[in-house]
Length: 187
Image 1 (cartoon, rainbow, N blue to C red):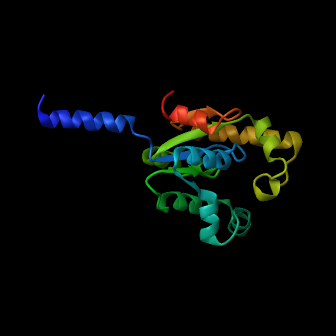
Image 2: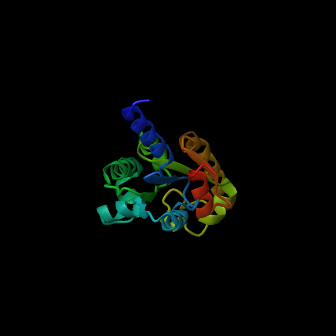
Image 3: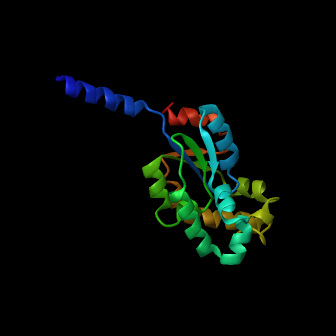
């Protein structure tokens, strides 16, 4: 083996074991992307970024206000622009909006630019978590009880094809930053 070939194999093995630079957390609203993202970024020594907060700061209004003023179609376009035009640090954990992976080529873009993790929860668990946050969630405002669970179940059926493109699909019920770190390391 020549010196040049040896250098290449060493570099390739180093890259194979290297920690991912960007980690995108995806999943339905209320699955814990922001909470887990903060804990995971702290554990890994990465910067934490919440794309919803970046979008709100850029527009000077909440997502609910933007939705009401411009509608879902305009919001989804803006959300995609924020995803693709944000300047990311070398290492970051990024919390995404629940619908972001399901529009345009956003999921493929995230998979090409980092490691994606789908935090998966049942409709019932999501409904329990979201019941008191409906004012902040434009798609949920008028839904309660069984209607909320049914709405979430229907949305998950639509969205699972996108969410399941994630590099890692993790059960969100007992998910911790330590467990995610293990999944990222292939443990």
